[in-house]
Length: 324
Image 1 (tube, rainbow, N blue to C red):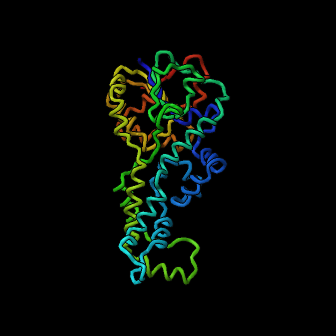
Image 2 (image 1 turned 90 degrees about the vertical axis):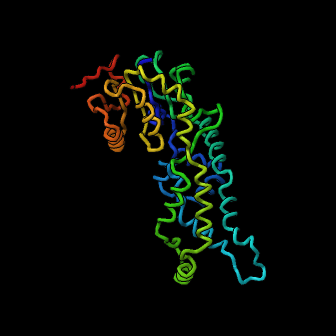
Image 3 (image 1 turned 60 degrees about the horizontal axis):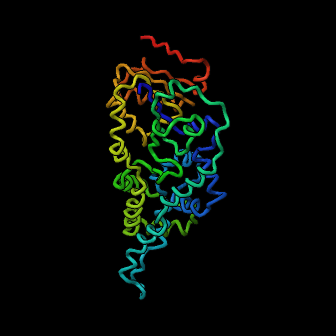
């Protein structure tokens, strides 16, 4: 095996499949509004950017949620009804809000993916596809169904629809989330009246209930972390087979920080001084991400060619003129 393909979501999008996370959001609004409402309550999901960066956004819990949960569950110590359990009420509420959220997301994504339209654009010309290996970050079966690639040549690194658990999540640890929340400026929720704002300012200054909510939220959101290091260990034998790779095609891959450890693992086994890279780019943001990866890993940019994906169909065999 001398050719390796890295396939990202841009590959499916290029084929006319509505597989963006913003499309998943639209599906939730129409088919499973309860999950959408839970996400909206815990995160600031109003922006398109939040959904475009869905996995990364799962670590960025909303301060409004922190303060609202704290405010609604602050113990009234002078009350005749007060008990020790009241000190834990806020943490319990966080548990109720987040319980099984990740499992619900995975199940709904499975339903959404099963309902996606099939590829409706011309196939790309894939070089030597019968003797190549494919690592795909997509949950779909586009490689199998459109290109007839055998399963033995494909690794669905984050799982595949209808074939077990899907791997979804962000890249931060509970400790990182906790430090991020503690380090943020304590801003009041939006839309408070002057009277309520004054009350808020009196209540929320290093409040113990807020501390409990931050700790509980960090712990539960931390459970949504994508354990990339474990996945790499699981597939260590696959990575070892890449020592003879001569060319790597990267198609529709966004170079997201969450997924970069896989690329860095590949670099451990290939001959970095000789392997040719052909990488698709859709935007200037993609160009910057590719350039950052090359520079960070001290790679020879003369061995890289950045293309538009449709370029693969412009000639029978892609000739790459590298000026050494």
